[in-house]
Length: 289
Picture: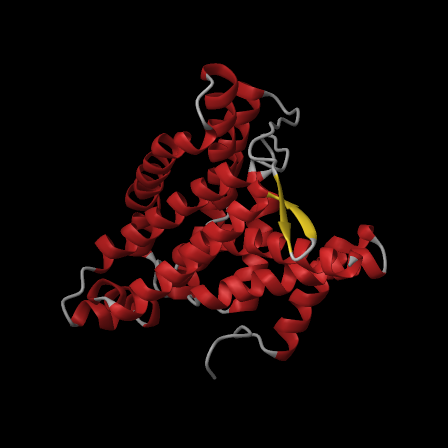
């Protein structure tokens, strides 16, 4: 039973990893922008939920009505006015990716510095939906189950959008070759900005849900950016269901490593799996080819 509880805990943690990686998969897999400031949106969503609850006694889930539109608009503005000039001047995709990494790396410290000035560096947290739920004899918290359900719902929704709609076909065409997509009358700048903004909105959702059961501070964003990047590379760039599956694999591996060996090996397990995937299947576990 203890082993089953460890695996179940790993599945729920893996769902959280999948959730935080879905937005980056949109930004990097579809809009073709490696955003190193990605995790700062999660930090913003977490602080928004925290202040809504502690200052105004408003349900953290209700804060999504504020944080999601703000994250969407903020990421759209970043793409439109900060990243679009890089797209126009870049000679090729490699140059664009290098420029994007440098610019968003600087943006990370801007957001982090503002958050540190406003809220300080101490860890914050609150308790919400920490209700025990019994699953096949094991006990888990409802807030973790909610994050897992949200991850599955968003992954399935994005998969359907990309595979079964005209908009999704256009987004997939951009992911494959933005130049060729323009030749068939696809508005690449507009749809890329939409994908980038939607990725930020998903991260705001993740920030709200994660803040219900994990503490956070103004510097926590980079940790989640790295975790999301590992999951995206493992699952395959642009693969939404692969992203969720990779998150589950990572979460279960962490849980089993902590149970069977040592809880201190979590980070080592993360990067060991990441390096193994890069060596054996660098295009991702769930990519074709």
